[in-house]
Image 1 (cartoon, rainbow, N blue to C red):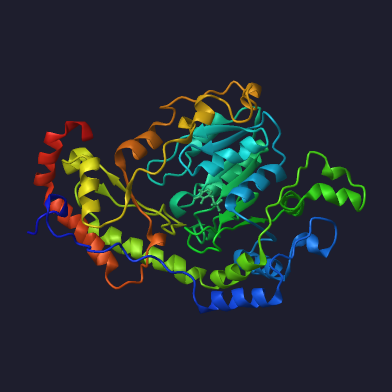
Image 2: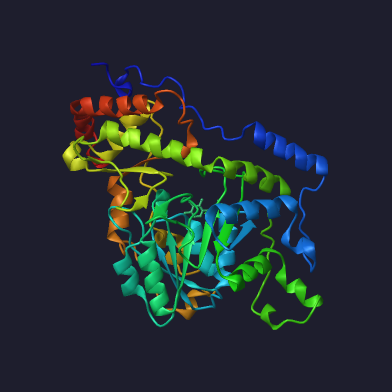
Length: 431
Ligand SMILES: *Cc1c(COP(=O)(O)O)cnc(C)c1O
């Protein structure tokens, strides 16, 4: 049995893991075509056909609409912009409460704040890591205006139930589907079940345009409001008087023709890119299932998980080794990974100090919501104690036998648990 790399042995990997390369000859050709046209953005921030962007932006949106079966697709320059626009489109007002999961990327919780909304954090489910619907029910107050759910790690939240709840209560459901392309719940695509679904096309996601995002909706009015917020909508007033342009501040969230041209090519390959990650995650799960204290992820019945993140729940008591020491040993073998994900977002100073803008605490001055560490015990435990995460999208998962060698590294560390227990005994603070 070879020695652990942590203790001076030879690592399983002697070089960094092979990086994903997603740009192929088609993307290169598409970029050159835009360069030759000399139109790098077709947008103009005033009334007219260019209000909705150039030919590549329009073609990309058309292809996305077709692929997702949604009535509208509105491209933006990031999912963050898309989430901000979605909050504006549904008319979040200062003091309105928006229910969000506490365990997500920070942009989810910043979106309501931009419109003076108050994020109300709820805990996540132990199995899917998406928002707990009972906690959502309990969080609804007369001031609640929307539920902003996240299909975290590529697994759908309880979307149909959340939509039914939102409809019954007269709330909007917005999906942060940044991580969820092609995820599904009961044959329905994640991103299309809420009133608005927001996708990310940043460099780290399954398909990307460097930076970028897409909003989908079946609602004509919401789609129009998204386009107004995307592109200085207030300027349309000069063209003809309209009374829907109050409470409507336009931004510049426009996608360039270069990004859209890349997006068109990436979208053609979305099936292969998602399936590649699914198969890779399935191989990792298969090869490590049943190890003590190592719970591999799985999809809820009827759901499709795209494995943006492969999250293992690590039980240090059953493994007999602290997560910190185990993770150090795994990293020394060359297995790049992380422990935890992000701290529950209520721990951010913005919430702890209830100050987002300026000195006096707006918008929290409009609310008596407070934010305490420990509010969401499931997310706290997952983050602080259990989660071991790997991001398949970062790596070239088509490299032969990469999964086999990652599995080998995990087994190697498991086989040397006695050595690691000794390390823990020397440094009890790592437990
Ligand atoms: C990546 C991500 C975002 C932000 O996407 P950008 O396109 O980088 O703005 C928002 N929410 C979640 C859950 C994400 O993973």
